Length: 333
Image (cartoon, rainbow, N blue to C red; front, side, top):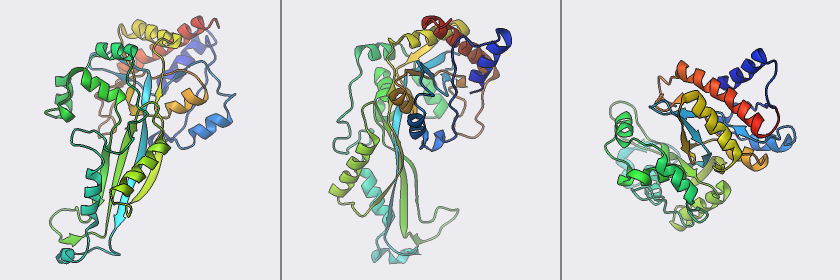
């Protein structure tokens, strides 16, 4: 955000005005699903009408190349819970009282294979294959497998993926991930307890054409058919995926700005992460592109998360050039 604000203030300081109209949308619910942004944009659609959207984040890779994302995955975040008794019990009663943790684990195992394929009926029904232009972008997208494994301390990728398969999965495959699971005693030492309740939080990454509400119905049907209708489902939030056409003029405006400010750039079909980008592309009918200053290995969402001042400066320059390029391409100068 600061790089966007600094770009505007730089123009105001040097030239007295910005080369094109600039509108800021600042909201504090992104990490919890941006529950109200869609309603807000619909209400003030005319006020926020625009010809292009620069998204709120962006990454720079280990070779100091900005990664320009032309979209974002969607997300469905749910909690599955089950209670079998009114209170925790002594584990000697495990011969008489059902353990909700065991049943919840059994239910979770029906959701996907060990390689990550989701087993819920019709889950992939609306998923579209990548087109030729997307494949071309993916083939040229740099991904250092050894560096990635070293950074995260892993020996192999899920399903032993390699090469183009890795890149495709990051931007174009749905996921089913256990974000957290809780039941019984998990403190230090031992405690022989039979838990009364078990809960698991699961996030499903979605790709274009997948509707979060429709996916919830499929999840509910799956659990019912598999004999787990007693498991409660709480939906925290759902967001559809967004994608911008790589041939759009706005993409050229941004990539040219990145080339001039960083000397190089990387074009990506989509971010593997999620944000309410679909609300902007769908409601405002404008292309949206993510480009920013976050170093890709900056421990995002982890202890000791950091940013680099040099990348903040380069991204600010990039934002200035984006505004200038956009003004020229839309004949607003």
